[in-house]
Image 1 (cartoon, helix red, strand yellow):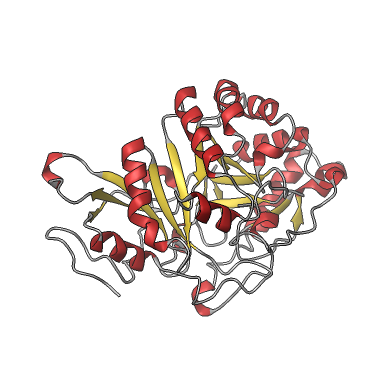
Image 2 (tube, rainbow, N blue to C red):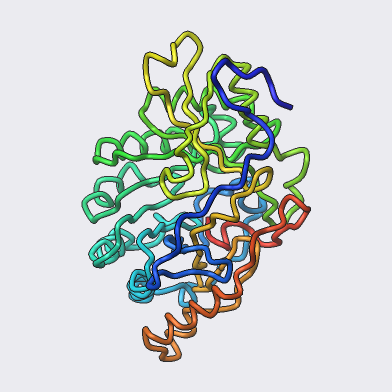
Length: 364
């Protein structure tokens, strides 16, 4: 599976050594049962989306929850305050498509004003960014991740089922103009659908000043789309880049880059001497072939307020119900700590475990 490695590059396939954890956590940090320090919460604003991506939901879509069942804005803001008081310093808003939530710019402003929050990011499909990028930036959004799985308009429509590539490209342009300086592109790679486009995506990221992350398709969903015919590993994607003439070198400090799950490589296209420039960063999120559970630093909150300690487990604690039943902030914090005591050591995707929920319902 591994191709020829350029001189000076590290091995491009196969498992790597387990990452070392940092020092002992602060006594005021939020830690799980495995002694992993949790600094990052992903909060899904909605299970609704204006796309129907093949890797996210069935073609017919999913049954969405009733709007009164979604977390209210005041509940989301309150939860962020509680999480920050417990040591969380990074928040990412997801969906579904978070920009379909009405008054989302107002929510950004309220969250951004919370003392102690260092990073407020959003993952979006980018379709609504042309009109919303500037207001989001002005309201205090720090960073953007935009889904971009292909640069071919027809293939984009095929993968997203109803997406328009030109709107997403216009949204990325608007985000740059609005002053977002750390824009990441998320590309979920699917065998036989967009894997051959990996070199083109990397070239686009290089030319545009974006950071590209290739994401392995995880066994999550209610249909049978995931499997050997659709899954392609990070190692195979690196081989595709090598065969297209790219030079790749592992960034030795990539474990700490951005505090997320991606391992980053520096990339140079054919004809560019690696000694002449730092190289374009490209990340690989390999949840299946080379998981990073030992250094997991995150939890998720679903659109209806369920705390998901791990992406692969359903979660049992309803933070929404706790708030609506009158729990104060101290009780919420205690419930969160109790829930994290039951967090598993890791998923079992590589052993065939599958999560039978659509990603759009979990929170991307």
